[in-house]
Image 1: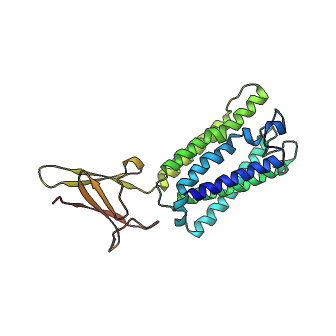
Image 2: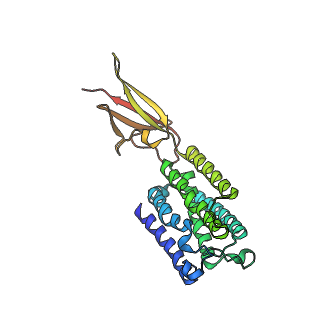
Image 3: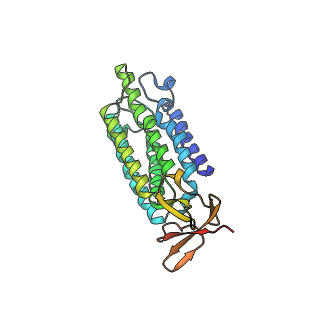
Length: 267
C-alpha cells in the first residue's frame, strides 16, 4: 500500500527536519566526534526499510481489531521507552537522539523524543500486523532482519570507529541482534497461517490432489479471487468450511475452520 509507505517517509523526513533545526543533522553542524542524523544507520533504515515494510503491510491493517491495536501500541510505547533509556545510558557521543552532557532522561533531545514516539507507532503497528492479520509474514520478517545490521550494529560500530580508531560490533550489539533475529523468526513461524502446496498425482486410475501444508510463500499454490487455480492443466476449486457452512471464498481474517479443495475432472 503506497499511501502508508509515503506516510512513513514523511514521518522520517520530519525527524530529519527536527535534527536540522537542532543543528544535529550533519557532521558540519555537530563536529567530528558525533553521530548526527545523516550518519546514523537507523535513520536510513527507517526511511528505506521501514517504508518497504509499510508498503507490504498496509493492505492488511484493516483486519486488526481495536483491542489488539490498543494493546500493541501500549506495548510498543513501553519497549520504545526502555530502548531509548538504554541508549541514553550507553551512548557517550552526542547525536541527534542523545546529548551525553545532560543527566538522565534529559539526555534525549527533541529529536530523541520524536524518535521515541515514532518508534512506538512502528513497533505497535508491526506487532499488531504479526498478531492479528492473515498475511504471510515471510518477506516482512526478511526486511526486519535486514534492518538489524544497518540500524542496530552500524551506530555502535561507527561510535567505536570514532573513539577507538577502529569500528567493531561489541558483545552488546551482537546480543541485541541475536535476540531480534530469534524474535522475528519466531513471530513469522507462530503468526503466519498455514497454507497449502497442491499437486496433482497422476496414476493409472483417477488423478488425485495432494495437499501439503507450508508457510513458505514460494511454495503456496496461488488462487484467484474466485477461489480457482490451475495445476498441471487441472482446475482446482477452493472452499472455506466453518462448521456446517461452506463458503466459496478465502477464509475471513481470524476465522476458525479449514480449506476444502475440489479437483475438477478433465472433460
